[in-house]
Length: 284
Ligand SMILES: [Ca+2]
Ligand SMILES: [Ca+2]
Ligand SMILES: [Ca+2]
Ligand SMILES: [Ca+2]
Image (cartoon, rainbow, N blue to C red):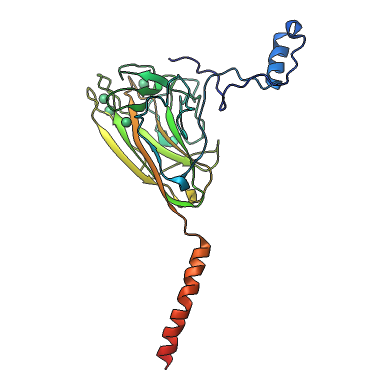
């Protein structure tokens, strides 16, 4: 496994501000940590980027071709509005769970293994692969029960939010898993997820090769229209036996403008005299 996975924060590590730690050397351990907590000190290095991408400014695109987006383990601060999670949601080791049943909303810790050059690693979780066609990929494991990418979207004044990407088997090893993938969304941070119809795939990989591509294109249900905090999760689950790495590539999240009500009324105002004229002529 890669480094710091235990602790996480959603904000960059902060300094000690206006903090009185007098008597620090005589504090008991519990007192020290209480004082640190009060002072707002974060001790983790994991960074998520959970800023909601404003779809009114265009589509959210990500093909992972920019190698400098991810350079440090567990740090997503350089990737606009996308974060990977380990999916360590079960204290035991579960396998072959249907990801459509995992809707409670738990994501696990922020996770990425940066700068990998081969998908023959078996760490599990989320990894960035600097391969011929760069990609970020997911792999289930005993710890990574349900590794995932989450896209954070602001659909204010937008409708017909379309989520498209390619699922790529990037694992050419002899690993042979029935690797499931599922797409879910939620409109409340931390809330339960809803499965997106058509977003489930029973097995997106082939043993011994890294060529299978599964194109995905899904339009979110209408309640995502105009929603300011849309979170879309793409997850796999730990398969029985050795899991394959599943790339999530060529992400393209598009939408259409909601026609403002004022414009609709304006069109009606323009049309009414014409309609009135037609009726008047027919009465003649
Ligand atoms: Ca790519
Ligand atoms: Ca494969
Ligand atoms: Ca398979
Ligand atoms: Ca497994």
